[in-house]
Length: 316
Figure 1: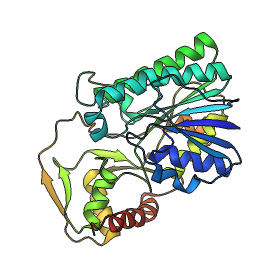
Figure 2 (figure 1 turned 90 degrees about the vertical axis):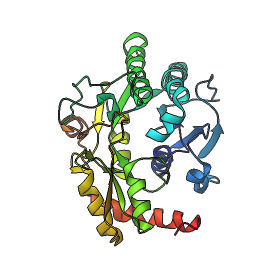
Figure 3 (figure 1 turned 30 degrees about the vertical axis):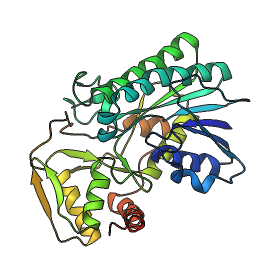
Figure 4 (figure 1 turned 30 degrees about the horizontal axis):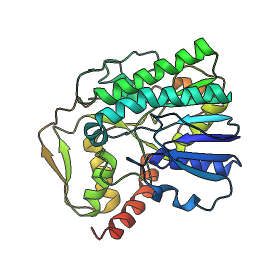
């Protein structure tokens, strides 16, 4: 296949580029580098089947030649990003998805949207199946991201039903691994960086909020299978293993040998979900997929990357 991956210089986009290249496909990466970095794809600079276009997908997208698939991963994806870039976040979810869908229609390409578990908001159903419509505050601090992705799902399905476009929608749950940004505001890089600096890990509130963490290779496998499937409705891809943030802090401290423990601060008012756990029955049934990497195994693969990054920045 010849595929276009928007957001290719980001954490997930760069790992997807690696996977498609390893399968023998040609990859065109596209990114405006607002939150992505060419460091994530530097190792692909001389790859014969990889090319890169610096472009903002909220503007008209031109790609010469045929395309078999478009994977739309362009978007700020962490609370810090969408609090600092609210308009850009809304625009890439709305205008960017529209432009990418238009290109897919023009090329006769299959389109895969990177959606998110954030479409469920602060859920009142637990765990969250794809049939749950969500509990989202559209005017809260996270609303720009949540509603951008909800709109992106809606317009993707509209192109599928009205234009007959082949579309896929993946709802991604918390994912971690090498190439995450150190300061993207999410709990995995925050905790690992604090632990490697021998600082206490910061818990907000009582630390009893829950999250489900999947290693990036599991997510990439699920996305690859979904693209090649016949499923047009949204599919959750996440690890159903649920941990409290306090439990997660203990695991990170143990794996890094950090004896500084934790420190508690007042709960931030960012509409943070209190629970998050995917129901992956559909992915198991339709894709034959389930995560293979345990949290301890994934962190053991991730921590050395963060240690090297902090050394490179002379922070440890």
